[in-house]
Image 1 (cartoon, rainbow, N blue to C red):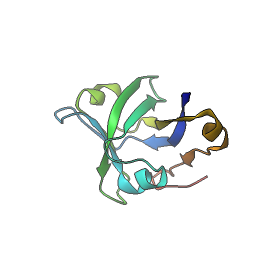
Image 2 (cartoon, rainbow, N blue to C red; image 1 turned 60 degrees about the horizontal axis):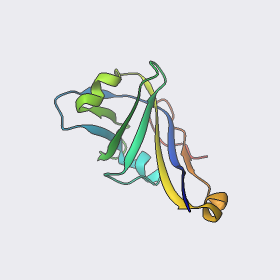
Image 3 (cartoon, rainbow, N blue to C red; image 1 turned 180 degrees about the vertical axis):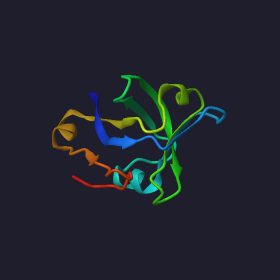
Image 4 (cartoon, one colour; image 1 turned 45 degrees about the vertical axis):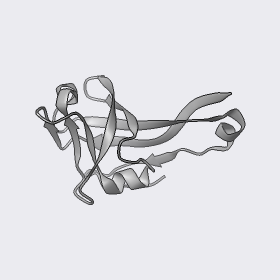
Length: 117
């Protein structure tokens, strides 16, 4: 039996921009994606701490080191620049593997630079 568990989380990143006229998704600084073991195209859940909005989309790698967190397309309606978001990915695994698995947790600083836990 496969179960779905937390794979990785970027906890409390700051939205740096929104782009309504883009083809959807969330652009994430590639340094943050690497730290969280996320890949481009991976499905993510985005939770907005400022307004309670939740949405599912996919990750796009942004320029390294710039701290970009940009909600694109319709997702841009769910956040504003400066909002604090949690970006979560999940994985399917067997129960025995899931019991041993440790998720990748990233706690960005005020400039969205990765601080690993």
